[in-house]
Image 1 (cartoon, rainbow, N blue to C red):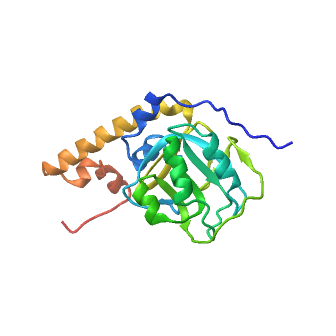
Image 2 (spheres, rainbow, N blue to C red; image 1 turned 60 degrees about the horizontal axis):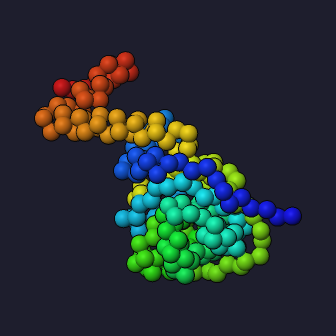
Length: 224
């Protein structure tokens, strides 16, 4: 008998809030250059940002019945993450379901298929990240899974992992590492702020990046 999981372990709101201010590139680098989803999945509007626990969905291509079930069972603050086989030629999500998400306080939608009604979704202000924009409709036929680990954008996302998105793309942080990665991200931002300060003070890129020894080891010479 088909069965879906509706209850998951989520990070605390404080853990989500601690990661939310950092850019996806910062988080990716801070956690060892890991967790970055395929660069093909992008926000439908560059100003969109999201950060929240993943409510995962495995869906058949060109079919959004499982996405609709996920919207029904997800909680406020969740990010619905839909793995649908990287199928670009379908618009599985639009403004009607976007309004359903907003009514529940869902923090955003990520999918490796297409979405449509993007002008209306942008007006709604719901963060939506997708592989494509496509006007072609979907069916509601094939049952799949909810809240099992999924592969999306080449990365495994488990229910309750934190997914963060901005203009640059998407990154996933394992729930167990949330506090650690937030601290590492903060340290990285502070280090980068110091680099910028040193550049503005007139220090060279070679000096700030400690490149002299590296370049010498590689035998690089200049005409200076």
